[in-house]
Length: 217
Image (cartoon, rainbow, N blue to C red):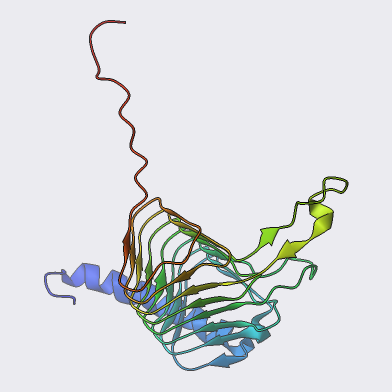
């Protein structure tokens, strides 16, 4: 919808979109598959592009970091938006501890400054909205053996599934092994450690009354 937007503002929007499209034409040449128009903002990092598949009208906004090195690759459906400053990291930068990867369905989006740690497989369905600063961690460190360092004990990867038509609000953290059912709403700031049945609304109520402000010290 561009109704109510002045001519000069429209020109700015079209100019910026055109620049992103030109970047996308070039960067798309290195992808495993590109299904259509790709928009790439400034400062975007795309590494190991031959492991990345994109549908049509995928948007990588400014300063997003897309790290493609992983066993199953990264797959972005049609009309997917990856917000400004989002980090998608399935593996270490140096090829150690190769991760599994990410699938994100059509018309889904990840809000600004999100973190998608897809060392275990992360599957995000269609029409899913992740708000700003959401974090997904698809692995857990082993730590039962007190005789050895936690780092040396490796990790467990069960993966994360978010089914279709979910709204994950700002600042939500989702841990490994969680499945969020179709049509769920997860309230801002919630920590999700267990499966969520379809159609649920989950709110992590952390508010705590301390005292009223007074003029006394």
